[in-house]
Image (cartoon, rainbow, N blue to C red; front, side):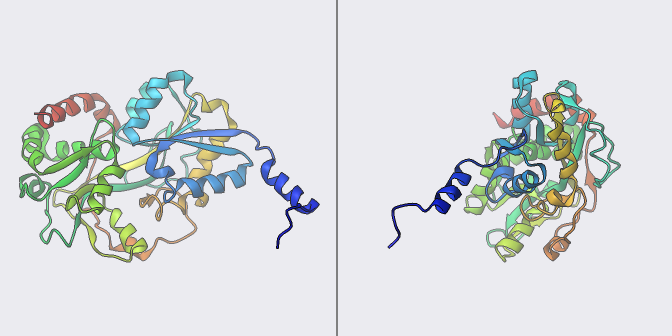
Length: 334
């Protein structure tokens, strides 16, 4: 029987737990919900960086990347965020225009992503390509192109995300625009009949898909790696599209608030190194943008490799995003 009286050693041990050594400063990072989920990279990243900096990392999450930018714009110069992690290149020009972000210094030196990356404010931490992921048990002949997706059987539904709140949702809008151009509204009108629902963020749409609510979902070429590695399953696959796939590069930036916190610059340097990058492939299920110490799981070699990379410049997106979203909304709300 354990004694109800604490020994002096036990009491001291409990006191140490109750009153840990004071952290040398605090870093507040705004990001998206799937990053901070228990299965996401957030918990491991927090542990690794806190061990290195003797500080406290506070993650604050919202549904998705577009919602992230909307929150920072709403808070303005009063934002508590030191770092915003989870925007993508489709949002960087608009984010810069707010005047709420500061130059990153030399943090971007060690990154490598498709294209010639140059940006003095935002630093990539991962990348992938948008894709239609399908359930092989429910869909024997998936679409082979965006055209087949748009013009296919309306009984075969897809869950997509809202471009006003979600970076994948915005990615699909830009993918359609890059292929269809001025005829994008007609494409959306045809695709509308196949859309089961439009969710605020990626997590909700992917959850509906894996629960069997729809045989297809807008996600990433890297998503099947999760099922291959974690589930030991080949059931969910990405459909290669003849026109190519739209590229997403996810980035982080230091806010003007964070520019006064020396931990922000330290975190950005940490983000491009193995302590962060080794975590990304099998938690965020994206491709690493910086230096890793571990090789990728062989499952990543079996993923769809786009025949063509589609992407608009950040300035093109900033100049046209509102008009293109309004165009989408005009069709989808009818």
